[in-house]
Image 1 (cartoon, rainbow, N blue to C red):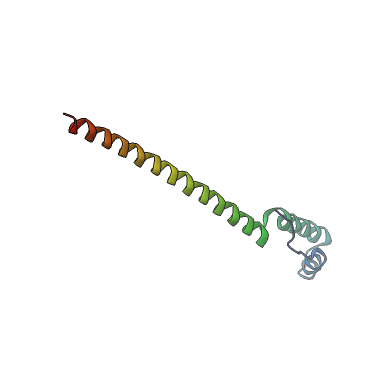
Image 2: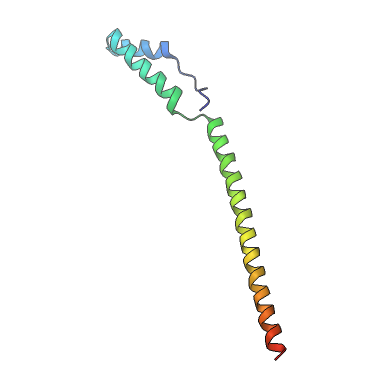
Length: 90
């Protein structure tokens, strides 16, 4: 992830103190929250990249399926022509 989500650690620390946490508790809470924001939350860019990769993978899948269907139909058509040719020559 790109780690561009702003998180005001000083303000968070101050809020914890105002809520009655000890400095040690507030520090631990603030560090845990900062780590969570940095490592676990996705940014808009992260989601856009995921969307673009998904679209590219979907397009590749569509192309592969189209090729497989075309080759299958071509094979079936060749067999049908062969059978017709055999039957008409009898």
